[in-house]
Image (cartoon, rainbow over all chains, first blue to last red; front, side, top):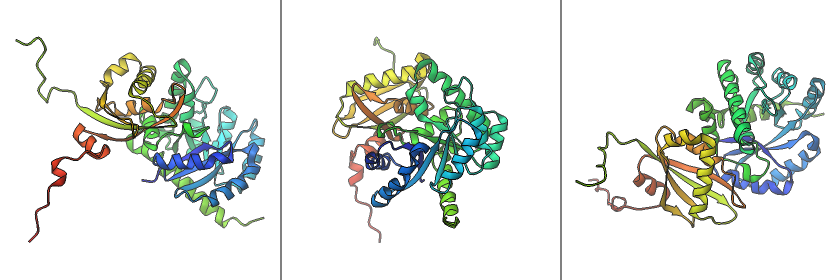
Length: 229
Length: 131
């Protein structure tokens, strides 16, 4: 089985090698290196670096988009779509969550429950996610960085999101959301998180392997046909 | 009469699984440090009641300091919870760590053979020649 983690931040280009090395050691066959939209200029240098690197695993580039409004989100998505293989929208605001799920150019809606007192998505959003094939993300970093009361809330929101997504057949993706190489976790551990949140063994394994792999493969195919300029 | 209860027959004993894990860190760690960090993590994550269900046991003799590799015994239905509790350890003392599981076995013998490179006499048996 090919395992992918599509949400590992690179804050510094020097750390790329270390991240890739550890990802390979803990059993990934592909990793998505994520840059923030604000640093989109670094994407070209990152791609050069990836080409130089002979790592032996599949490396994809992802852009994480932060937006304060729906119009801003659409503008940013259309700009980033031609440049990177995976588009991740940083959720948290209900309007952004909904707009991201209604946009078929978006691949992943990251942490919809981020800094919220509810789960951030409802049946309407999830149905739209199913129609537009936007994967709802379960972010391990959210669990790792919180503790006690807040962690309990985050887990219950995630459980609700999983329940909704399974009800409407929306894809679920489990990622580490790592900010540094020390926050990466193995694919089997992430799959366990899915199972603890109420997914079946089969679905939780799919959400660390098939779902991310298909996202990367489809987008690569689409980007190839896209005319330049 | 002995003053301890008799060992239960195999059908009445709880079913076990053995989780083999490895720790990636910049500094080599000792068994006691990992034990404390793990207990802290699992009690925070599952609470006392949940932890009691896992029937957790750290096998001290199986800790390999050279490879940073160890063995945890737990109930067969709680393997995924234990795995998450293990993954939730992010630092031990001042050292940042990545714990990850190599695999799960049903017996200690199989775990030793698969992940600790232990050989038994069976491994050296010559297969019967085909005629």
